[in-house]
Length: 135
Image 1 (tube, rainbow, N blue to C red):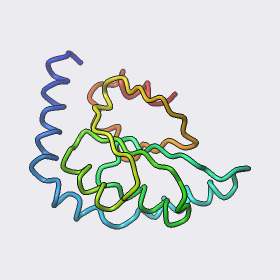
Image 2 (image 1 turned 180 degrees about the vertical axis):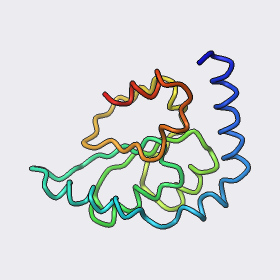
Image 3 (image 1 turned 90 degrees about the horizontal axis):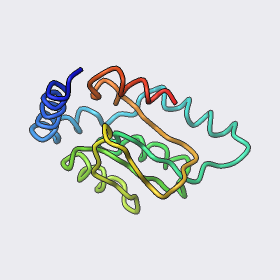
């Protein structure tokens, strides 16, 4: 995919979330059933997860869900939508939220026990960027 097409698609996606953040967030209030499998996975770990990063966190509902089971979890949410991050901050006090473009290199000087990337890859134009997420 050429750079211009990628930019057009990313700009279109950005505009969508600027225009619809409140309505989108309201339609994304219920946890997905599969998230319980994450909690079951955590229970099987030989340690309690202490730090989570949610890439493409949107309105922060996954962090909110995990914290019901792990209230002391340190969480960081990353999303490109300033509007959705504002909603996430309201739902999740004492959480660090960063407005970042996930298609660019994300450099954080932190370590995480768990990385969440839920319903994000379809927002990243180009197969070469998506294939890098498999590592």
